[in-house]
Image (cartoon, rainbow, N blue to C red):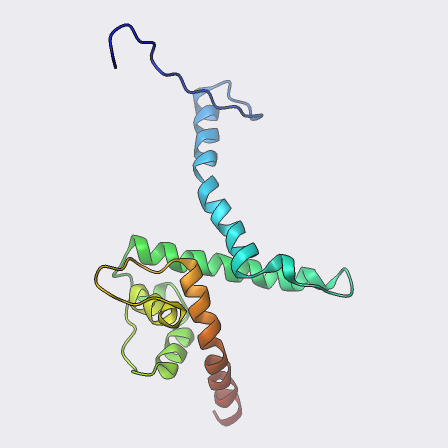
Length: 164
């Protein structure tokens, strides 16, 4: 800061009660979650295309929106877990049935021990090149990969139900 310059003062406008330090801090913590909430809404609108769905009756969107909200949360969870803890076991993040199913539909089967292995295997047909310089997949790449893998996973699930 140069001499004689006034220091910068930040002001956050809010309708929340901030009369105590604890209330003010709580408001700041809520604001820090905003980027994640915006990304969740983008996942709902862009990835899951929730606004493009058209139904003939008003009660039908409720069920599909419930399913899609769960899917959007799962996509973000997989992205965040993969980026935060590379060596976390995949079985702690997704059901073992998903890991087994994905292993079976891979062109070159390999163990999917970690959440990173799982998300990369799921995202690879969605555009992830898996080069050393590439980062971890985002939710959009995971979503595109899931859309590609879903027919094979559904067929595998149907075969297991029918033939055991």
